[in-house]
Amino acid sequence: MKKVYIETMGCQMNKSDAERMYGMLDYLGYEQTEEPKKADMLIINTCSIRQLSEDKAYSAIGVWGKWKKNKPDLKIIFSGCVAQQDGINVLKRAPYVDLVIGTQRLYELPELVKKIENGERIVSCDEKPFAESSIKINRAKSVNAWVPIMEGCNNFCTYCIVPYTRGRERSRKPELIINEVKQALADGFKEITLLGQNVDSYGKDLEDYQNLSWLLTQINNIDGKFRIRFVTSYPTDITEELINTVIELDKVCEYFHIPMQSGDDYILKKMNRRYDYKTYKEICENIRNKIPDVTITSDFIAGFPGETEEQFQNTLKAMTELELDYSNTAAYSPRKGTVAAKWVDLYVPEDIKTDRLARLNEHNRECCLKSNQKFIGRNMEVLIEKFESDKNIITGRTRNNKIVHIPYNRDLTGEFIEAKITSARTWYLRGELVE
Ligand code: SAH
Ligand code: SF4
Ligand code: F3S
Image (cartoon, rainbow, N blue to C red; front, top):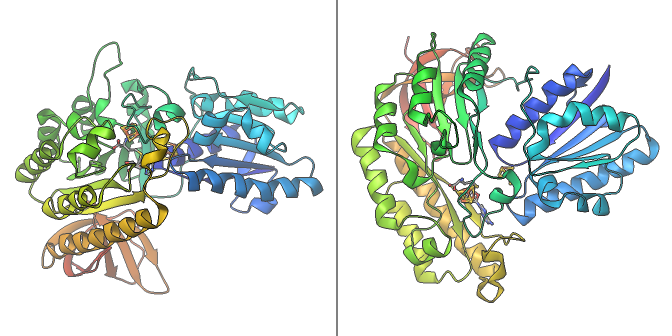
């Protein structure tokens, strides 16, 4: 049997795409391998969110190009967001690539692979999305299954490449999603994470308009003990109905990922985010008042073009004031083709960006520790994700997405247990099994 290796970079959407590619390739007779050197087909599934991720993709593939000299039958595929963005230009930088396949052509993979097996070289990055496939997905071994419900973005934040790499918002049909969830549960998955660049825009483009609350209700009605999560929420698209749905549905977890990006109103406007700090704060407080143990996580960018020290400090203040439980942080990276990248005169110097990012991270660590300390002494339900037999530790997550380490000498992966939280670290809690 031929072997395929996929190197995936970037977000959960890319991870989910990789599982779909493994499924389609399995169907064509390619077995998954974790050792690139043994593979007959190598796929780099790229991310374009920052310059660094894009550079990594091209440098990783350079090594593969060298392998091809001694192994001429080796097939190299370039997929994901950089593929969608660079199209035919990928071949200029990496002439040994056999196939460039954009995010929107994912399900065309089986047909295209047959062609490259016959020696063709192909670029397929048309913006028109290719129809879905019914081929079984080869999911990564885990307790959590990623299920995309929508893809693309209509928001065009001035710093962001995603609307160009993932296209306009498209919702998947509810029947397809529900069948996929049922299959994942039948395969033993215990947690379903619904994915989308703006998950709360779900359904806006469907003929019989159905929204995220409706979809969560349908999934919650499926029999069995499992958890449901959804990411990522655009702040102002979180409706009262959605908050109530999270409260009412027993399987839907108390967790929201709501990127704020900046705590400064002027910068938010320049970013083309459709809210000011006050609005974000009200959304956050409303959720916290209604859902006691809710975890709210966020994303922030340091050093957006034109950001002053004072404006940056508003971001630090916001993080502390809203007691955010965890935040992803990044220094602003100009992306070609986006609006903000053109504001070269306003670029914040690298050393200042680096310094701001470090301070943002320090603040984040303080917020995380404070958030974790709230749970000391509490009993919480934990879904176990792994067992480290050398350390005798089981690790899992609470409903509100806190990681818990528990001393135990048996593998309980996939089981729901109760733990008493005994101490808190920055990135995780420690607990004891309640028997
Ligand atoms: N749709 C989500 C975010 C998806 S992109 C939202 O709008 O909330 C994931 C994160 O990458 C963003 O939240 C942002 O913080 C970061 N990001 C996007 N473009 C970036 C850039 N050019 N430089 C630095 N960080 C960026
Ligand atoms: Fe990017 Fe903004 Fe769309 Fe999020 S909402 S994916 S940050 S353009
Ligand atoms: Fe990266 Fe594309 Fe995801 S740019 S973050 S892999 S949507």
